[in-house]
Image 1 (spheres, rainbow, N blue to C red):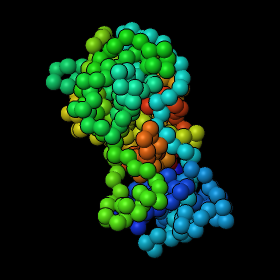
Image 2 (tube, one colour; image 1 turned 30 degrees about the vertical axis):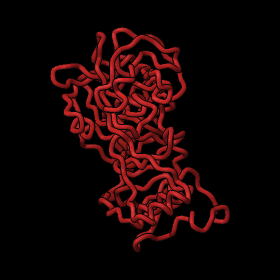
Image 3 (cartoon, rainbow, N blue to C red; image 1 turned 120 degrees about the horizontal axis):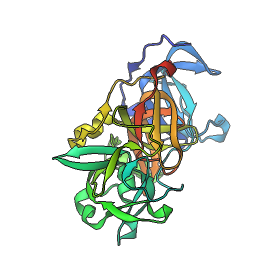
Length: 331
């Protein structure tokens, strides 16, 4: 049954952002949701708070309990698991010509810059040259560093190191660094002492040169340039997957994406992806706009993103998200 509830933007105040400092809280929605009780929606507007696991109040420290109301609005706690950047594990092989959905990674003499394996999302054009699109954390192990400091030290390989490593297929052109923090008492004290606001990241994405032949489709041949790209998958848990809206990537890098793309995504829309680990999978958008605390090597990043039902596993980061069949939407 389609919900008639109209989702409105939520004004993110400092008091709402402070929920992210609670031990079990992993994210907050940026839109006002309909509060659910025993899985059924009510007519009461609520702030949706995402947690790794729902726990009885008696098992939480007082400061880690989510209040029943914030800014005179009810809260609604939703369990989504422990969200991590997905660039580990899985299997793949050498693929030539290059296609979307295959294993890639990076190598460097600086072992801290190396990555195990992720996914080649798709292809774009920049200044007349073909580039590959994937996640920042697939291109470099030190996501917080400016690309100008490391890109000359890194080579992009296919397959990734975890899959045995392979030949060099390109070099980093640019990526968006990710600002990380550690969720410790000292960090919280330091931030409040110097009145520092939490920093929200809008991208986990980068581009690299393509130095081999390529085909504009996925390895399963189920995604091609006639499909509509809507995002880039970058993280997930055993319950949900996260992705960045495609328009941010196009605008940030000045890309011409070599396929159709769209921005009109709402709760209930069906989406699909082709990834290195779980292949071609589909799901539905759960939240079109949220801030989620994602675990990276080196700390946590607060990510402004979309949340979907489970689509992915470790190694699928960088997968292109496309618009699914509208006849299978869940609203």
